[in-house]
Length: 272
Image (cartoon, rainbow, N blue to C red; front, side):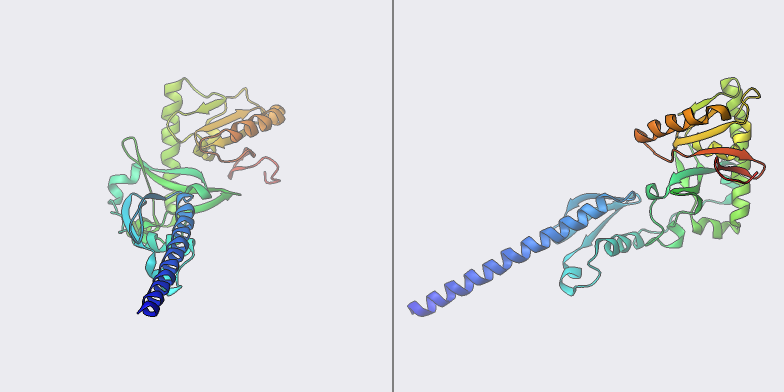
């Protein structure tokens, strides 16, 4: 009897140790997933559940059971799990083009500030184009104190090419900028926190410089800032842009640009 009791106690101790070990390993795994998800621009961790995690992905509340991938030893990397969450976001509503055509606008963002293109279904995948280095060009629908990003699904539903979308968005930005210049009394050398499209106005920079600014150069250190100076002051502007970038809430780049008939190009680009 004593031997049986001792054996039972030993077995219970072994099982308890195994359970404690498993719980510790699982918690570390869940913590690693939490850390990865918290660093993404589109996923917010809300709480832990008994066997997983509760999150908000692009504004949609979701939960994920982490025990199953842990036991199966499949889809265990945080990046794969993040994409699985993104794939579960329901398709966004697509507004009719005639209702939003005049609100289409371009916007410049760092690629890392946008939800990644992986994981999402096309209806939710934000349309983006390379611009310069880490900076990409995206498109939004301007609403009342908010914007909605244009997705690949919207473009397909509207039967628009990327070129047609860009042309329309650029025309809208030109009209919006002309109106803004009328409100602020004409061109200036610093455009900061006016309407959220300051850096994007690099795409229509020919409207921004007054005639007395010779050979203008432009800086967009923040999404909400555009600075321009005469070409002779390029070095000073470069230093100013670097300082602004270091403290920017929505950083873009310290690089300088100039205007050409084909649009903006980096200052050191040899295109005319």
